[in-house]
Structures are given as C-alpha cells and as structure tokens.
Image 1 (tube, rainbow, N blue to C red):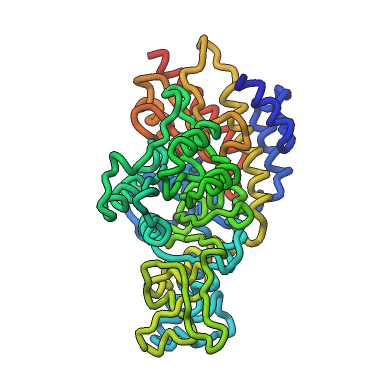
Image 2: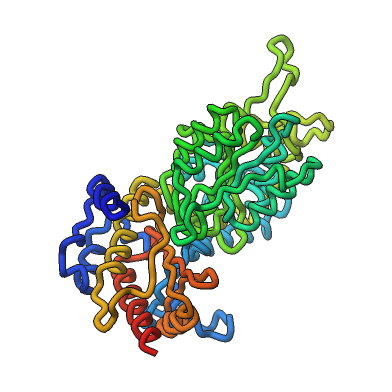
Length: 484
C-alpha cells in the first residue's frame, strides 16, 4: 500500500527525472541537476563551513574561514540550525554603526544608505518580509520573542478553559518544550494534566507517523471537552508534514481553537496560514530561516482575532482579544505618551511586549531578504526534487555485500506529507560508528538517540551533488559497521 501511494504521489508532484535513470548513481548526473536548478545561485549567499573550520580550536579572525581552496563540509542540518547568510555581517555592522554614531537618536534617524528603518520601526520591517514566507497578511505576523515564550503568550490569549471545555490536544511525541509549555499552562489554570492533556500517539512504534484520520478520530473523541488543539506543522522527529488545512477545519467545526508550532515548517514548506484559517501559530527563525542560534522568533494571529474595536461615536476603545500586554504592543501613535491606557495595535503586532532586540532582528531580516528574492513555492519545488533525490539514492543505490539496507526511513514516503527532512532509523547498535564515519568525512547532520539521524537538504544552499556525496559516505559507513 505504502509503495503504491508513493508512486502515485510522485506522478502528481514535480518531475523526478532520476527515478528510472541508472546515471542517477553518478556525481556527474547530480552536477547536471544542479546546473538546471534555478535557485543554485543562492548557495553563494551563505557561508559554508569548511572541513578545516569544523576542526579549528580557535576563533581568531586572522585564521581565514572562507578559503576557496579548502573543501566545504556537507551541511545537511538546516533543520536544527541554518547556515549564516553572508549579508548578516553587513546588517549587524550597520546596526552597530548606527548605535555608535547616533545613540538614542538611532531610534528615529533615517540614513541614505540604511539597510532597514530606524530602530523604532524594525519590527514592522520584519513582519513585512516574514508574511509571504508563512502565507499571511503583514498585519497577522510579528517578529518577536522566542518560540516557547511566544507559545505561552499565545496560549494565555487562546487557551481559556471552562468547566465544559478545558482539554488541550497535542502529540504524544511533541518537542519536549511544547509539552512542558502545555502542561504548565494547564497547571496554571489549576487543572490536572492527567485529565486535561490529551496525547496523540502513533498507532505503530515501527512507523511512528500520525495519520490524518487518526488525528481526526482523537479530536472527535474529545471534542466536547477540548478547548485547544496545538500540533507541530512538521514533526521534529519524523519530519512528517501534517495536513494543516484539513485538521484545522475539522477541529474548528467542533468549536476548538487551533494553533500550530511551525518551528520546522517556516522557511521549509509553502505555508498558507491565512488561507487555512489557522487561529494562531508560532515558530523559531534559526532553523530554515537562518537567523542564528536562539534568534528572534515569530508569531501569527489570524486577522479575525486581531481586531481592536472602538465605539463609532468617539473612537473610545471598546474591546480586543484578551492577552498578556506590554508597551510595544500598544498603539504606535500613543506609545510614548505614558498614560497607562493600553490600546493595542491591531493584528499580531498588538501581542508584542517589550521593544525588540534590534541586534537580533537585523539577523532575521538579513535572511528574510534572501527569501524575498524568490518565493516559497519555488523553494518548495526544489525541496521536493532534492529530498526526492536523496530518498531515491538511499533506497536504490547498490549496496554490494549486504542482503538488506541496515536502516529504514521513518519519514512518510508521500512527498506532500514531508518537508526537506528525512529521518533514518539505523539498526540497533550502529548509530555511534556511523556518526564517527560521517564526522571523519565532514558531514554535518544531527542525531536522535538511540538510533535516528535526521538529514535535511535546505533548498537555498544545499546541492544535488552534496546529496549524492552524502549518500555515498553514509552507505559506505553502513557497510563498514555491519561488516565489523
């Protein structure tokens, strides 16, 4: 059943020319795919660590880290931390220069050669560039805070338990921080997580994906007592991409508020948060969006929840959605009056608390500027092709001397049900030795104990040739450890 579904979906997706071509198992063929890639030039916009860089013991700038004669590493870990865009340094330098020569006046002073507006308006610039990446209106997006903090802020607004509806449905294998956040929100309302937290578990531990019909069944079972559904758009462990539109519509039809953690989806797949009528979402920007470790995060609040109503006669504030409030979320026209009357900005901007770190937001904007030179549909098209090529090589590349491959792919085979990531589960006892060989060959991926590695070709800077080289190294490593 699974293999038939896979073939059907490939026919519907972008053409995969390597499927029946024996030349796919050659470096030259991979290079030909790169030559046809319309996004290939974006690779030059990123700093790819070299093999020597990975082994350096010092950080001195005098030791060049971008020597063209030094072979680049194979970096397939953008699902954990994206690479640094070359223009990040320029954005940060301009910020430091503004602060140095203008001090507090940098909040309001324009410059002829500025890369972004004065400090007081940088959050608006971030929202403008972020909106097309997640499929939202500019007013529905704010670049702010960090992922787990933002989930707490959003749940403070959207999780309003009653005696009848008080449960939160999440994945049983959600990223631990999401689990902690949900559990603590439940306890904050003096409820018992054993009763109020519903965990969706996979039907099979061997193939730990969550089928859409299984998710809908859990929603139906607990619909009358559920206040909130909070799921990952892409599951961090398996790489599964959930059917956001269908799940959202079904849960909302039962009167349930729906939020999505898009940490592994933003900058990875072509989200349409507005069109899918998602209530709220949050994500970090340091994975596929390359803003640096712990970089400033983002939120989405659908326009229907961001309205600020005033009376028609005198314009006096009438109502807005309850939230934890802070001064930077207040109306920009009255922000500096200091009158203690909170009037929120409409939309997601009204959920901001403190003034943003201009240092951090420069790093976010430096990467978003690259994304705005193309589109998420083009990025997604390449992602489907390059991840499909990775899968094809892993499943069909000849492994002389082995009866079967000592690993399985636990990411869904249907291309529409995954992003850039493939999660490979190794046979027991192989992980450490395989990782050692990958490290020796300057391959950067990440692991999830006891037996999974996650491999994620990022469309803006990874190449088909790198995917080919990875597969050669990885498969030879598997042969070596099995032969021990």
